[in-house]
Image 1 (cartoon, rainbow, N blue to C red):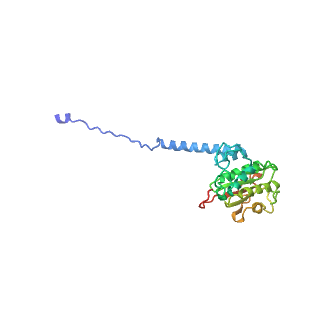
Image 2: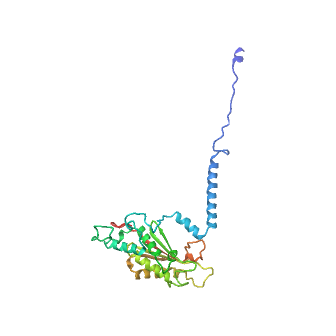
Image 3: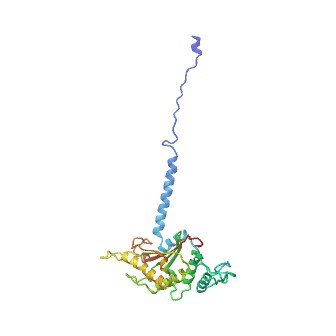
Length: 277
């Protein structure tokens, strides 16, 4: 029996393996943290929308949109301004002379006519701002207008103020400030040949009316702007679309606010060879 005493006992070890993605894994914690962060950002956005005014929200939207600041005092650059401070009338005359090939800044090229479409949309925006800033009969005219550069082109938005509407209430009869704005737009947009679209919007009403005038007004008002622009010299073939949206697309949180009464004019970009937009 000596051999049996020398043999070692067999020991069986059993190890319990816990999978890493079990109940005590950490992947779900990361996902939960991302979810909580997203919800916090969402409720923060809702709080900001509820605690800010329409003007403040408009300022926040403009902050994240492409803007082109304009100053009346030049920084000494060359080109359209020539490094000098000029008023709106001189600016518009300078552009017209440039189109006709009489721009003194283009020395040696006075006899060579310039194409109107060589003006960029940024230059058109600058001319429009300067022209309205020099308007003395209606000093609050610029408050009726918002300019924004988009991928499609230069968007020119005309809208009501609380105490100064663009049209007589319930009609498409333009007020004096609207007639002045249409005249200025006709003069400025006449120096380029970009296509134009018009979109009409009106505000909603707190009570239900027997006849819904929102749709007819949203069409007749941009049509009135269309007629005034043609009278100011805009070629009829430049108008590509005229659309009425009724009261379906409010621009503010309050659908009955006068700010929703607006006309959106879009000066489209063009991709034709030899033209620069």
